[in-house]
Structure formats: structure tokens, C-alpha cells
Image (tube, rainbow, N blue to C red; front, side, top):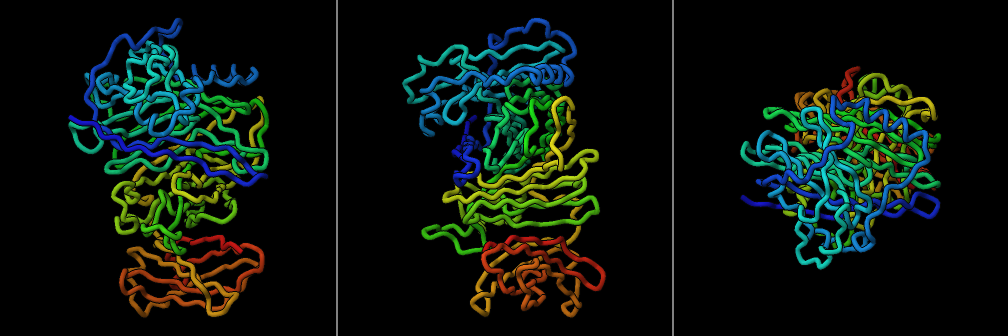
Length: 525
């Protein structure tokens, strides 16, 4: 029996003075094999909580809190907030005290506050209808070389929790999901390593007024039956602008699915409400030359935003690391799906034995019901290092909800390494930029691959439909068979717009038959 933990700090890079300066770091962890014993003294019964606890109980708490003034949760001691990353890594949960390890497919491990986790959350279990508080105890953790163990308060609380499940092999329990920090969570499917994060909610992201980070302040974790293949839990969300009740159902596997039900109560009207937010990292890829001194071909956890419209149009937007803050809005009437994907799946794309970017999961959001008019918003933040989470994507309703009118949301987040099964058209697999034939020209090369276009003959009359926006001018184009991959390559040149970004769009067709998804790109001035 052994334990292996890989961790790395992540933060949101700084944004310019007139933009949001909120910084969020998170603790990444890899797979962990656990075999442990549970202390019954962890639990205490909560008065008045015996019975069928449900989403409606959490909803009542959220509704009541919305009528009251927001009070920030108690902060942890300063000495824990200022410890280094390496000192925090030395604080380990004692896996011998893993909850629920004596039976069943799900196990629960606890996360210590400190470093980037400046606030504690309350954790409860639900067993046979009874809610029991999980009490903090310093003896649940080992502190390694740290000298402050005796200063840890007995009522400190937890930063969050990890859920373990026999994901890869029958007899091994691997971390499959982590909930810790603000309203952040991560999950993996079989054979993957942690990367992209989801969030409960995003408020006013990348606006001059600054971003508001709602917090999950309390969780209720329902103990699954012995043979269960899914786990249900609830969360209470709170912030200055909104409260919310959340119900999660986790189904580990390939893919791992996280179903989300949320009911939001506004304390005030916010400028932008971000639903089903996803957060990832893009440092550099194949579209530009790699930064000086970097030896790896590419470094990113996700390389594109994929979107599916109600009319079944598929749009692919490659990610970038811009020189200035870049915000894009994609107009939809009730999207059928959107997500941040990692399409480069070869080890040779990265050549990194430690980070294994080719094993990072996609996160695909599938709305339930009619979400109405709104936007998929993409925020790309300049970053000088790979430890920054600099990409955010979410759904933004055209009109934010108002106080006194609850907002209901239902969706699923699917974590895996595959494309959405519904995406049957050929996909854009690489975007490369280069100098054009003249000084003010830009060359763009896009590779498309897929079974349908691979089956076409070399002489098929495949053509490109290209849009370059009102400011730029299309000056040359060619579509040719890629003899190496079997796909098709689009190469075109534009005369750039002076001082303005150019919005580019392209897809391939054979006669009236649309062969590919729509590739879209914002070319910086």
C-alpha cells in the first residue's frame, strides 16, 4: 500500500489596473491510493437534523441568508495563510482516518486550511437520514517539518474534501473529485490527472469593478449504499451578491459525470452572472513560437473552447495567451453544450513526464432545459508562467436575475478525454500563425481531421467558407489534402486591420455538405 500525491500551486494572473485584480490559487493533486481507518469521534449530531435531509433544506437556508446582510466567514489564523507552498504540502491528511473506508465504493478525505485556502467550510455527513457534523481535529493530519502543529485551533474547520473511488483498478481507491477553495471543484475520469476546474458561480469576471468570488460555506455529504456507483451531496453558497443551494450527483467512470442542480437567491443585482464556470490554463501552444528558454513544445491544460448551438452548429475557438486581456462573447439562444477541451493528446505534444498535460480532462457542460438568450463568455488573461489559471469560460444570461426572484439551474459537467459524442463533423486540430507574403499580411493555417473528410477522394471539390470581419481583407486561400494525417488543410492570408483585432471564421464544405465545425479566432492587432 502506498500514497502518491502530486501537487502544484495555481493562481489567477493579475489583470490591468482598470480590470479585475482578484487572484485565486488552487492546490492541484494527482491520484492517491488510500487504505485507512475511521475514528468515530470525528462526528457530532446536529440538533433538529434527524429526518429526510434534502435539497429543499439547503434552499431554505439560502433563501433565509439572502434576506440578511452578507457576513464573510471567519478567517483562519494569519500564520496559516502566510505559509509557503512547500510548507502547506507538508500538511497531509492521515489516510488511516479516511471516512467510509470499511465498506462501499466511495471514501472521503479531508483538506486542511492554509496557504491559498483562507476560509474554513463546515462539513456534514448524512447517514440513514441523520445529519452529523464532521468535527475538526489536528490529529487528523500530519504536519511534517512544520513547527506550528501545537498552534492549530481545535475548531479550525476544513478547507474542503476529496472523494476517492476505485476509478482505475478494482482494488485501488483514486481521487476522483476535489471540492476546495471558494466554489471551485475538479474531477477526473479513468486514466486522467487533475487539471481543469469548475466553479459554482462567477460574478463580474474581468469587469473594471472587480470580480466577486462566491464561497461554498457548508456541505452535506450523503453516504452512498455499499454497491452504489454514484454519490450525492449538497452545498450552501454565499457571497455579497447572491446565495445559493446546490445539489451534486457524482458518477465516476469514463466519463466522470457531475450533475448539478442550483437555486440562486440574489441579494443585489450584479452586472454579469457566470453560470457553470470553467477555469483552465493556457501558456503556449503550436500557433506561435514558444517563449524563449522553454524546451517543451506546448504547455496547456486546455487548448480550445467548443460550443454547440441549439441549431446544432459546432464552433471551435482555439485558446491563446494574449498580450492584453481578451474577452469574447458568443451569442446563443439556449446552447446545447459548451466546454474547454484538450485536443492535443499525444505525449510528444508536451514531452513533460511530470505534468502529463496530454492526460488532463476536458470539461463539457450540458444544460438541462431551456436556458434562453445569452452568451458564452471567454476570458483570456495574459500570463508569464504556467502556474497561472488564465482562462475562464461560462454561460451568461442576457439579463441577470433580480432580488426576490429565484433562479433555477440544472446542468451536467462531463469530465473525460473524448470529444462530445454528438460532434460528428470534422474538427480543427491545429491552428498556426505565420508571416504573410507581404508586410501587412498574416498567414493562417488550420488543419481539419475526421472520418468523413478522410474518406473523400483527393480530387473532391472541398472548398472553404471564410469570414474575416469588416476591417480585414481576405487576399489568398487554398484547401489541400493533408497526405500525412489524411485530413484537409486550410491555408489563407489576410491583409490585417490596422490597430484593431480581426474576427476570423472558417469551415469546409463539399458542395452543400458542411464537412467541419466552424473554426473561429480573434487575431490580435
